[in-house]
Image (cartoon, rainbow, N blue to C red; front, side, top):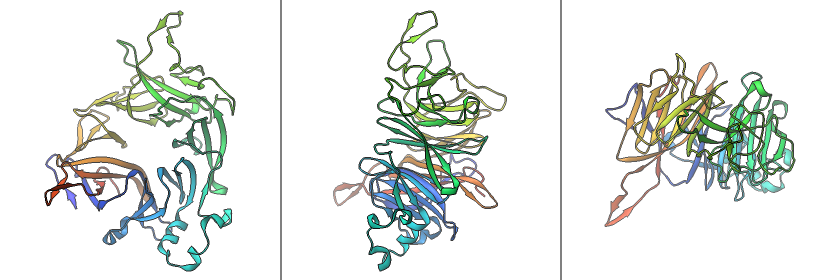
Amino acid sequence: MEIPDSKVHMGACFSKVFNGCPLRIHCTASWIHPETRDEHILFAAEEGIYHLNLNELHETTIDQLYPRRTLWIYVIKDILMSLSGKTPQLYRHDLPGLVGKQSHRFSLHVNRIPERLVPRKFALTTKVPDTKGCSKACVGRNPYNGYKYLCGATPQGIFLMQWYDPLNKFMLLKHFECNLPNPLGVFEMILTPDEGEYPSVCVGVKRGYEQERRLKLDLININTAPVTGAMSSAWFHTNGGSGGSNDADMEDMDGTATVLPRRESINVVNVSQLDKDSVLVCYDNVVKIVNLQGKPRNTRKQLSELQFDFQIESTVCLKDSVLAFHKHGMQGRSFKNGEVTQEIVDKSHVYRLLGSDRLSKKKLPSWRVVVLESHLSRPIQREGTLTEEGADLYILAGHEASY
């Protein structure tokens, strides 16, 4: 089922893949099975980890892979990383094994041995040591050396891991103590090759002072952060500085010992790195492109600011445009000239973006799998009572050249 709309540009539409899903979903990821080549959507939900085979939509079933509450998931080379459990912790899951076990769930030799008694090297799901209490995680790739990193935020600070191909797992590189903002709204990796091999992590954005167009990115530079040392505040690398104290705990200085008012923190929707020196920051109804010092980055090929006429709830970055999602749909605008490239509006439904990761196929370009859930704007009235059924699940089709 597709939702048509007179405001759709370039053929974009929401295509329904599941009707009435009862799960309380936090996010999604996508994966291609290495043997069957079937495309799967994976769901991280309060009820556990589930998957939907897009090549078997006629069966209309979402199957459980793992039963524990899950807040975040990420797929890398047939391995699923997740933040799962009542007190979240990083887990590693063997996806082909879990899907194979699920498809043979009535086999006695699979279910007779409890998972906790299976030798660790044969276990399909394992805990990552020293990650208990991890509330946020992010993954990034250094484009210059190809290394992939995973950062996690814990009550004690931040840990940094690197993907190691021979063992098919993330290995711990650094674990250091620091104070993070509470609540932690932003936790995104920023690759800064000129300043070291390891990434920085953005943990907040603040407004500039009056008559100042720049933003202030709060970046923790992992290259200079000490390893496992008690600190009274985070080791911040902020707007090009070389480390210092957390200015959330002290006033800003202007270089002449003059105390300035504290900068106002922004309720950021999204922070995404576009290239070596470009970061997209979205808040309110604005998308800004700034450099690592927070200054507007305006070039011939790219505007530094895009204005939308609605409150942005989430964004997806494409190669030449950004998709901004709101309560009743989506609008895309070109980075080059700010023109509307595509738009979907359906006021009878309320939409929420669940995930938008890249999916690659052999001999074909990668494409973004954009997954949304939808509820009716008004609950259905049946037999004199109002009832609200499960959410319908959609993928966004036609938003870019998928194949």
